[in-house]
Image (cartoon, rainbow, N blue to C red; front, side, top):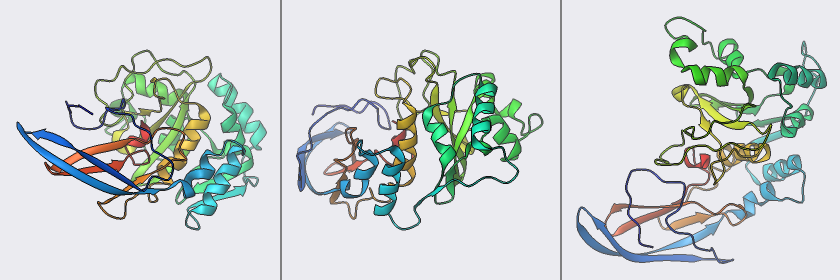
Amino acid sequence: MDSKATQPGLRKPPALVFPLPPGLKRLQLRGTVTIAGKASAFNKTWTVRDMASVSAPLYDQDQPWIERIRGLAKRLEEGSITVESAKPKPGKKPAAAALQDLEKRLGAPLPTMVKLLADWDIQLGDSSFVHPSSMSTVTDMLLGEWDYTRNGENGLDKLLSPAVRARYNRSLAVFVEVGDGLGAMAWDPAGVTLGEPPNTWGDKGNPGARPGSTNQGVWYWLHQETLNEPTLLLDDDYRPKTAEAAFTHVFQRFALTDVDSPASENELVVDTANPRPNLLQLHFDEPRKPKLWMRNYDHFYSMY
């Protein structure tokens, strides 16, 4: 690898692609790094731990999606994920009628994955997928559940650009994150505009979003801290990810973040079950001390 970091952060296109041999136990990296005009040699070896024994059910294409989630839940700490058959919601419309109303309101057919939620209540800690009988637009969620107002000092008209306000008005909130503030994953049936910024952390100089197929829309994350900058979920070609990929991403981001933590600076965690290549970041705290770690499942770079 002969690469030069031109800005902070991690770009989506990798500087180097290399295979992970099955059963890999150690990885050695040696070379020269130039920092502040001074070249220094380094030589570092990591012990490799493969987390596929935990994550594999999530990627088992021979199983229905809900069974993949059940399988993952069995391999995580008890209570990390709960999957239960959905029960009628008091005072709410039946799921079938609610789904029809949502399609009429949005003026678009709902993704099959959204309709799947009619049968299940799925929780990840304090966060959860929204049952169709309780689903609303992002704007309605912000006003009715997150205590924002339309106008005034902290009104959405001041906090959001016209384009983001329009997106939230027509988007469906499908998953709600309760943690360090409130966040949500939502679906915009209108999709993306060509060149629209993805707002992914650190991915500078990207070409912008590219439209997907008809009626695909686009999935994105929003959070209170960056309410005016929703982060689009795009594939490696910067086109909208599929609904199944977006739903799977929820578990990558919230269920696997503890599993992928290395036990020490001498351990490299990889995941050979993940069909997507492992995103590894190389960083130097000191010239002779390289740090290499996987970023597929962390808060920011899981968006890539």
